[in-house]
Length: 129
Image (cartoon, rainbow, N blue to C red):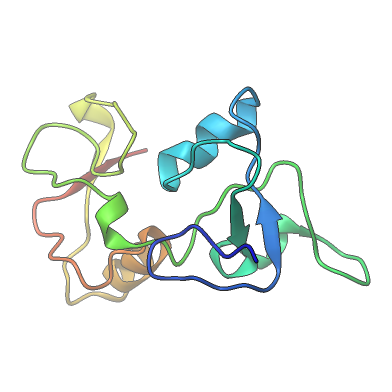
């Protein structure tokens, strides 16, 4: 039986097929998840926001959906280097970088949850706009 490919998840319910490697959407998914586009990989509903689904009797993923929540912190790279902290992002345009909010603020918690790094020390991290 298939299970979710997101590290640490392993969910076997409400799974959605990862786009094939030739698909434009695959490149976006690859930036946030450890996928290869083989056709047999699945990601569960736990990693998508509610608006990523089409209202129906059964949840159906929109064609524009990209996993964006409950992703593990290891998908983020250390940002002591110049550039965006999100794995796969190659932006080095410092003018368009935002510093992570202070770890004691509500904004930090929101950012950390969205990026799946709530347990990471984000001091000094930057993210592109």
